[in-house]
Image 1 (cartoon, one colour):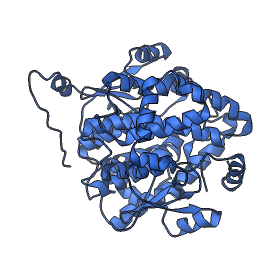
Image 2 (cartoon, one colour):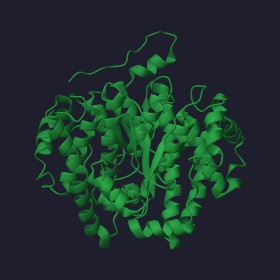
Image 3 (spheres, one colour):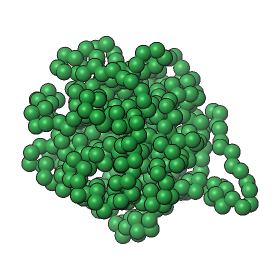
Image 4 (cartoon, rainbow over the protein chains, first blue to last red):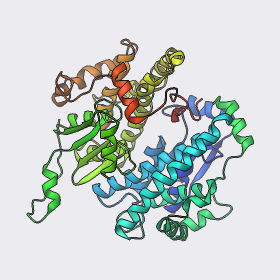
Length: 222
Length: 257
């Protein structure tokens, strides 16, 4: 159990960012080993460190965990951010999976070919506005509590904050009709660990720029 | 196989306990899609379930308007007083409830890694029928190549190294059930896909003989057949997805190396 978790990924948000968020919110210090050139990931594959030859990978508690959800589930369970019983876990999972679907759509926009971009952004905004944000606003309205599940902080509040910030980056007017989401965003942002993570100089990663996408496209051929 | 069942508190005033005695009700179309893994897991756990299968777009819209679908999407499973949506949320709930999710955090992590890999592969197989005609063969070859070089070796190695009949913890778990499901899906694409994987072949035979699973594999069970041209047409009409979405939207394409 000694040693900080070590995160293996590119120096980008991608599929690792939600893991960085959760560790930070849990107050867990972590290290990062960035994959910079193809040789870096080739070595990890050759060493047998990547179960499915893919990153993210997190070294934690003597294991080399891969697959985003497996990693998130482990961290959430270990640090008591996964609800108090099976029913709370079910709600947390339902809400989290929707957030991950939305995040996936955002990722698809980032890597989309230029001629598909507009259409994908349109679809993304439409789903955000009509499917996802209303669903979470409704949850908060139904119980009037400060957190999504169980009246205390769980992983899904962190996942939601993260995606709300991305929604804001996309188009801040999308949040306007959702007062409870805006309030939650404020509240969770003010939690000490979260506030620290939101500050400049933390391990939070920045939006990818066009140059990075082009370089990634060359390496990964998408 | 040992089964654990959650204890149900029978207090007359508890409305919840009344719904808990009912069987889970699965809402989907009459096909495999994303509901099939759920059918498998319930069946393997020996849990009887009912299905409300819609046949056309109108019936699906009626379900959406009923307000029980959190994101306007299926699968949805009514279970223990909840309207559960999102495939993984449903699977996790069932796995935990019926003792198929490991005995500790470490086993849970291994199960999660294994099922997530299987999900990546089964999604690819599931989307194959949506290929544009000119891409069909290429996609087919790509998926089989992935199965045989990226995914199956992992499970072959796990069984070979742990020398047990099961992937995790020396007893049946969600990972084993899903592995069998995906092996059978892959064999439908190419009958010889398991050649070169003797442990997987063994695993397939042994796991198929587990009584609850064996029952599910018999004709007349609630297991659904593979998609044919007619059922694909119905699915496209109900869900309105486009052809050619294969690979363009597959999350496994991201950061492929």
